[in-house]
Image (cartoon, rainbow, N blue to C red; front, side, top):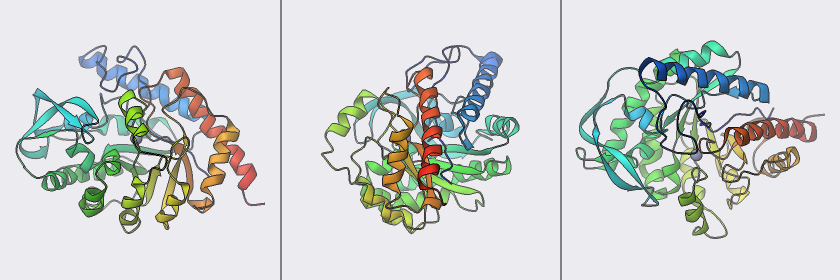
Length: 341
Ligand code: ZN
């Protein structure tokens, strides 16, 4: 009960890449870089196990960014000529590659780190991929001319990689769709369908992570414009509840999301964000257990999985590590408080 997991990313060690950045530069190249990525992955597998987490991830050590890591293995994308684009409805600017031709996979995208993860932990493992709509929002389209068509083109490629990840021994494939909280009408109209296309044929557990973004200034500023109640989930959750996706990861602690929106996910596993990624303050076990207690009003305990609100990539290693421990300790306390007698 209350099995714990993280949303996905963890801070890269200073010897692997620049720290505290969303698009960090690598510290080395070639074979040295490949080795450094796996060394960092091993370090975080051990740290997650030591903290006491139940579902382990690779911390996304092998990708520079959660979207562009996938795009680097896609043909039809021009990485040599990146352009500046406003993303997440112009919330912030990013240098993004351009879609210039029909899309296809060059080959496997994450085989190395997925098999490495499987080889180095006995616990259940989760692997994250960007969702189709979020990819569309993080790339400049010069070929398809239609966001929905582009999303379904990406969904087919994601599906190929997801099926291969399952064959590598991944237990949970999670798609990250922060764009669902920005383009709610599109998400309900076709974003969830594109997601289902990406997950087609998977027999492992499928999940989607929907958040209000990393704890960076642009996101903090945006959240201040969203008012006292964040009701974005309300427009997307009914479509997700009707979908084949099994788990939904959402923000809870320190957010302005009304907890009763979780009731819209009836029949789904809910990964409840009990760790704030926008604050360096370490949650106490009591705070984590209290958040779980609030969520239990709307989510049955066998469907509740404590999680982080979002990835921890831009944080310091020290803070991220302490937050992993808080997550596990809080879940343990919640098992005592709310477990069956
Ligand atoms: Zn997130």
